[in-house]
Length: 59
Image (tube, rainbow, N blue to C red; front, side, top):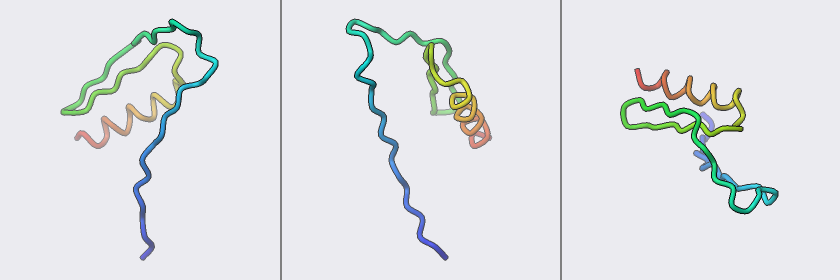
């Protein structure tokens, strides 16, 4: 069998963000001990897929 490595995601902010910009939460999802905060302007397809995975594994 092959070896599986867990890769930690690295999130970086874009340099083009205006100074004084404060991200505003649009929605929050809490399942068991996991909380997902969705911010305005986020990628909707990515956010939806992450929410589906959280809900699927919470069962």
